[in-house]
Amino acid sequence: MSPIIAIEEHYITHEIPTLVENYAAMPEFTRKRLHDHFELRLKEMDEAGIDIQILSHNHPGAQIFSPETALEQSALLNDELAKIVSKHPDRFAAFASLPMQAPEIAADELERCVKTHRMKGAMLHGMLKGEFFDLPKFWPVFARAEALDVPVYLHPGVPDKRVTDAYYQDYADEFKVFKTAGWGFGVEMSTAAVRMVLSGIFDTHPNLKIILGHLGEGIPFLLDRTHEGITTRQSPNSRQVSFRDTFCKHFYITTSGNFSDSALLCSLMEMGADRILFAVDWPYNNNKDGTDWIKSTKLSPDDYEKITHLNAEKLLNLK
Ligand code: MN
Image (cartoon, rainbow, N blue to C red; front, side, top):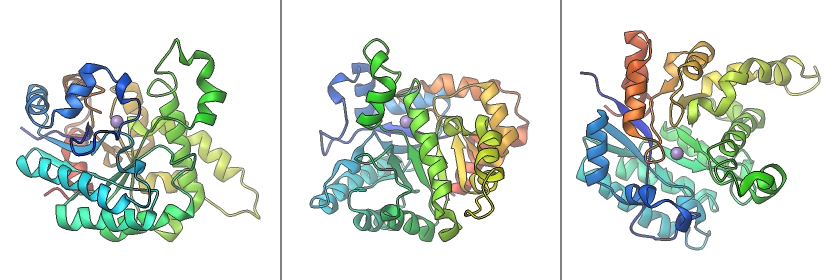
């Protein structure tokens, strides 16, 4: 039987207890699983037939560290993660958590995690204090990822307060998840991805690889329209950006929390099977829901192998 690798699977550190926004409001079910690094985690992986989880810290992880403490604190966090992986190296691998308030330290920490701990890349979350990561001050981190040939996973974070106030506040009390997984996460991360393309970072870093969760945060569905708006209607005097080419060359998408046949079909038609990787988004989504779904799809055997493990093995250099 071919393995299933799930690449957006979260945990919470035991080393530093205050790294999760809204921790107190988190349901006990979720908190218990995020803190469970082995027993329940492996049990639910086995029940669902997931062979390997690529672990990442829950939002916001090391992003919360100030430049003054970034070096020491992020090392503490990532060393603990490496220790978790080392207990079951056949079942786990990891994405580093980076102190993005100090981009040069974050870049060095990424290199340390990849070279010393054999981590597979990094995960960044949402915006940082109201700024998107495409801004040039963050480019040293992406430059280092390119040099190390590891991907950067752009994962949602709680939206900026200005956005929440303008977009979500009217319904936020009644519909708690409207501003996050129900809608706001997708708006924020699709915007983050489009901005990455517009920034020109892929001209400077032609081998940079970015991962988006949730089957591309809506972009595959809107790819043609976004390309039309950004590329075809661009005035001849402006910088020329081919949205479709850039997005499809540099981005990979995962199935995290979006177990939909029609969304998968759309993603396959727009991006191809080489760009899609299986993920659950545990414990926010159920492992078995994810594996039951992917096994039930009418994917060709070749595409199924790519999506469930071959693409991850290649992108993350797992073998
Ligand atoms: Mn997630």
